[in-house]
Length: 185
Image 1 (tube, rainbow, N blue to C red):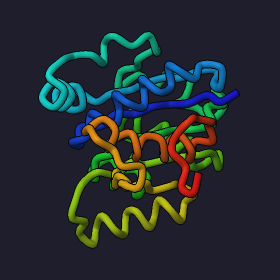
Image 2: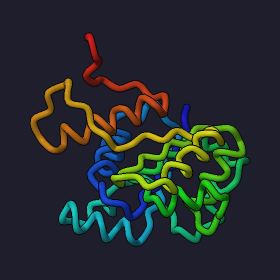
Image 3: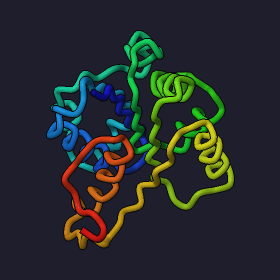
Image 4: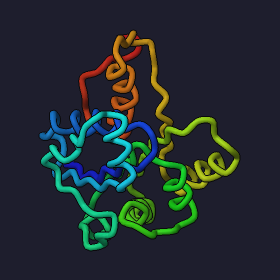
């Protein structure tokens, strides 16, 4: 059973976080624990992009950015997967350089040092060379960079369906089973 940390940063793309939390709520039998940490900027971006404060409606435990007593701030907490969705380039840069200045970057550092699964769903575009080198560094450290780049072969018709192509890919990368469009299926 998976123990998963979901981190939501202030990058644009709140729809991805919302869809991921919704999807995780429907596959409860596949995980033991899901914990969430959101930056204050992430909450503001959510309100701006989605027009609500729906992040407070989830029953998952939420942790403050400064709560270093959170169970996933240590390897002994045995959280095996961390998904940062969306992952701002600032957060990615701090992870790449080992700057653990808040709970998100500390948890990412823990996941990498324990050789567990870190998935960073970067959304910015275009990338500059610093972004690319930070992505390379995190990849070399064992992380997975999953750009929030949707696919279209499932013929999505709504913005939610387009965004779900990214979220479904993230769920696959996390090792969870979902019923979704499969190429050639």
